[in-house]
Amino acid sequence: MSPMTDSERILVVDDEHAIADLVVSLLLREGMQARACYSGTQALEALEKEAFDLAILDIMMPGMDGFELCVRMRKMRDIPIIFLSAKDEEADQVVGFTLGADDYVTKPFRPRELVARVRARLRRAAAPAPVANDSLITVGPLEVDVAAHSASLHRQKMKLTPKEFAILTLLAQSAGRPVSAKDLFEGAWEEPFDDAASNTIMVHIRHLRKKLAAIDSSTQFIETAWGVGYRLKASHGSDGRTGENPPVEGGEGEPLEPYAVASAEVIAAAEPEPAPSKRGGKGAAKASGKSAAKGTGRLPLIGRRGGSRGA
Image (cartoon, rainbow, N blue to C red; front, side, top):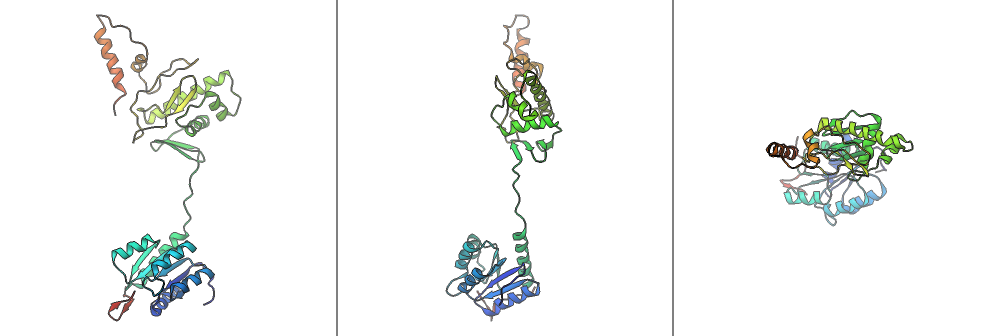
C-alpha cells in the first residue's frame, strides 16, 4: 500500500488476516485511511516509515504480542491505541490500560461500535490542549486575573477602579509578604513616590478593604505590616475564612481608622483597659468579654473463529 496522505490514518495490527482486512474495510467505508499489518515487527516497520493518527492492536500474536508492541509504539509515537482482542478478562484489560492503551474492545465486536470508538479517540487527540492561564493569581478564595483585568472573592466579581485593581494585583503577587507604600504607589501610578503618596495609598487600601468586606466580613484580607507596608493574607481556612478579629489600622504617621468590618468595641479592645471602678467594673468587664468574643466564631458481532474466540 502506498503512503497515506489523509488526516485520519489508522494502523490495524492482527495476525489473523481476515480480521485485520475486515477492520481496514470498515474504516475505509467511513472515509478513513487504513493499513493492515499482520505482525508486531511489520507494524513497527510501518510506523518508522509512515505517520499514523491511531493504532488498533490485537494482543495474542506470535512472536511479539500486542502488549509488547504497545510499549514499543509508545516510545516511537504518541498516538491513541485501541486494543481489539478476544482476551476479555478484567486483568487483561487492566494490563492493557496500564501499558498505555486508550481503549479496549473485545472480540467478537460490533462494527459500528468500533468505528464510533475510533472516531471518539481521534476527536480527543485532535482537540487542542488547554492553555494554562499564567495571568491568574489565586490566593485562597481571592482570584485576580491580570489579563482579563478582573478580580473575584468567593467567586463573586469585585468592582474595582484601575488603581485599586493595580494595588490588589501587586499585593496578590507578593501574598504573605509585606509590600511598602512606595512600591504600591510606584507600581500602580508609575510615578515617583512623594509625601502625599502615602496618604493616597492608605485611602485606596481603605476602599479595597471595604469592598472585600462587603463580600466576606469575617476575614481581614489586607493586613497592615507595622512600619513596613501592607500584606495580603496568604493563609485561609478551607472556605477562605479565618474567623480572626481584624487588626486596628495604624502605623507610623497613620491615624487610627476602624476597618469596615471592625466595631467600636474592637477598637476599644486594642487600647489598654483601665482598672474597673466599683460602679462600672462589671459593665466594663462584660463589654470587654463581648469584644474579645465577637470575631472568634464561624450491531452483529464480528471476530468469532468457528465457535471459539480468536485473539
